[in-house]
Image 1 (cartoon, rainbow over the protein chains, first blue to last red):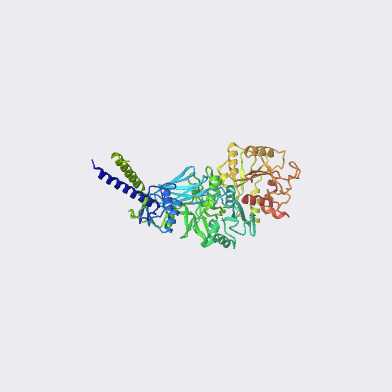
Image 2: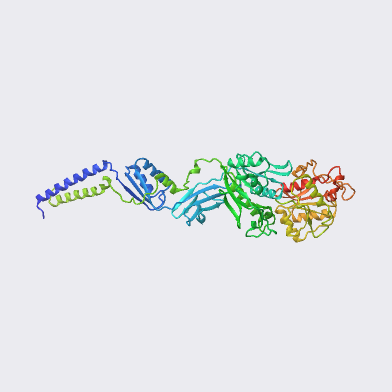
Amino acid sequence: MPSPGSRVQLERGLRLAGFALLAFCAWAITAAPTAPSRLVVRSPGRTGPGALGSLLRGWTRRAPAETLALEVASVPAAVERDWLAALAGAGTAVTWSGALLPTAMEVLPVSDPAGGISVLAAAPVGTRVQLADSLGILDSATVTRAGAAFRVAAHTGPLQIAAGAQVARAATWDSLAPRHAVVLGAAEWETRFVIAALEERGWIVDARLAVAPGIAVTQGRPFPFDTARQAVVVALDALAPGEAQAVARFASGGGGVVVGAAAARGLGRVAAGGVGAHLRAPEITFTAVAPRRALALDPILPRGDAVVLERQGPHVVLAARRAGAGRVVQTGYDETWRWRLAGPGDATDAHREWWAGVVAAAAYRSEMAVGPSRAAGDDRAPLAALVDALGPAQPGASRAAGGFDPRSLLPLAGSLLLLCLIAEWASRRLRGAA
Amino acid sequence: MSAFVFATAQYESGDWDSAPLVPSNIIDTIARYTSIDTAPAGAIVPLGSPELFRYPFVYLTGHLPVRFSDAERANARRWVERGGFLFVDDHNHDVDGQFHKTVTEEFARTFGSMTRLPASHPLYCAFFTFEEGPPTTSHELNGWGDNLVHRYLDAVLVGGKIGVLYSNKDYSSEWNYHPQNKRFFAIDNTKFAVNLVVHALTR
C-alpha cells in the first residue's frame, strides 16, 4: 500500500492532469482544424441524398482538404457534381477515379401528330440497357455499334436509361407546335393515297397536284414554303421549274423534305442519292412478312454522306442526308398505294405507319418553348458531365495524408479527464481525507 | 408512277356491260383535257375478285336487278374501306326501276347509308365547274325512266371522302358513244367525267 505522502503526490498529479485535459478541451473547442493535405473518399454507389451528400455538407461547414480524391462506383448526382466543382473552384484540388460505364441518352419528340418520343441510348457495345419511366421499366435492348433506340408512345415522368449502376435521366415534353405537310405531285394514285395516309395520321396537308399543263388542284396553301408554317414537303413527282430551288431552300432552312425518284432527279445534290434503273416484278404478290418487297423500285444510289435507312436485297430503298439545317429522306419505292389497297392484313394501317415514319424522319421539329422545369431532373450524359466538371479520371490516388482536427480528440480527452477526477476523488476518500 | 386505268365492274347479277362504249369515251376525254397518265384501254374487273384491288377507280352500271354475292359484297366493302372509289350509274334513270331499288338496297347492306352531296361539293369544281351540281343529261327527260331531273348525287363517305358515288342521271346512256363522235356535239357532254376522275385522284 502506498504511503500517504506518495498518495498526495499522485493526487496532485491527477489534478494537474485534469487541469491539463480541461485546458486541452477548451482549446480544442475553440481552435480551427487544420486542413488535411489529402482526403480520400470512397463512394460505394450513387449517393444522391446519401453518403457523399452528407460529406459534402460537412466539407462546406469546415475547411476542406487541399486535395480531395474521390473513388466512385457510379457517377455522383448532378447536384453533387456541381458541389464538387464549387469546391474545386474554392481552391480544393478535386480528383476522381473509378471504372465508370459511359452512358448517355437523348430524347426527341417525334414529328408526328400521333405523338411519341424517340429515345436514343449510348453505351459500350454489348451493354444491356433498360429504359424506364417513373412507373417502372418500359423496355430493354442490347447496345449495338449504332447505340440503342426506343420509341415511346406514352410514359409518366422523366425517362431514364440504366446500364448497370449507371443511370442517365432525361426530362421529356410532349409539345411540338403543329405544322403542315405539303405534298407535291401529279394527280395520280400515289399522291392521293399518301395524302390520305398523312391526313389519317393527323397531318394537315397542303397539296399541289398537277392535272393538266398549267392547271393544278390545290388543297390548303402549299406555297410559299416556310418552316414557320410547314414541317415537311413531300415531293413525289417531277418538280415544276423553280420548285426544286424552293424545296432546296426549304431544306437548308431547317425544313424536312421527302422525295420520290422523279423529284430526286430534279433536286440533284440535295437528294440523298442518284436513282438507279427502275425495277418491277412481273407480278405483284404481297407477303405478310415483307409486303414492301413486292413493290416496284427505283433503287437509290446513296451519296457519301447519306445514311441508308432501308434496303430490299442489294438495293437501297430509303436513305437520308442532311441538307443545310434540314433533312432529306429519299424513297425508292414506287406505287406504295398498291400495298395500301391490295396488301395483306392491316395493309392500310401499315402503309399509314410507314409513311408517318418516313415523314417523321425528315420533318422539322418545331418544339414549343417550355419553362425551366424542362431542365429539372435532366442528366443525359452523367459521365461526360463529371469529366466536364472535374476533368478526366486520375486513377491511383488513394492515400490520405496530413491535416488535424483537435475536436476529433475531445471524446478521448473528456474520458481521461473524468477518469482522472474519479481516481483523485477515490484516492482521497481511501486515505480518509475530506 | 402508275397510269390511270378506267375499270368497269363485272358483277354476277344483272347486265354489268350495258354501256360498253363509256370506258373508251371517258379515256378519250381524260386524255383530251388533262395530263393525267391514262391507260389507253380500260379494264373489266370482277367485283368479287382480288383483281379489284389493282384498280382504285371502278365504274358500275346496269339496268337489271343487282344482288351481290357474298364474295362480291365482302370484297367491295373491303376495297372501299381501303380507299377505292366506286362510281355507280343507274342506266334506267328511274327511281322506281329495278336497278335503283336493288342497288341502293345492296349498298345499304354492303356499305351503309348514303349521303346526298350538295352542289357545293368539291367534286363539282374539281376540274370543270358545275355550279348547279351534277350536269343534267339529255336522257333524264326523254320519256323513259322516271322522267325527272335528278339534282343531286348520293355518296357513301369513308372518312369524309367519297367511297361510293351513286347517280340516277344515266351518264351511262349519255356517254355511251364512240369518242370520235364527240365532234358532232356543240358542248362536250363528258366533261363531268373529268371531274369524277380528277376528284378520285386528288381527294
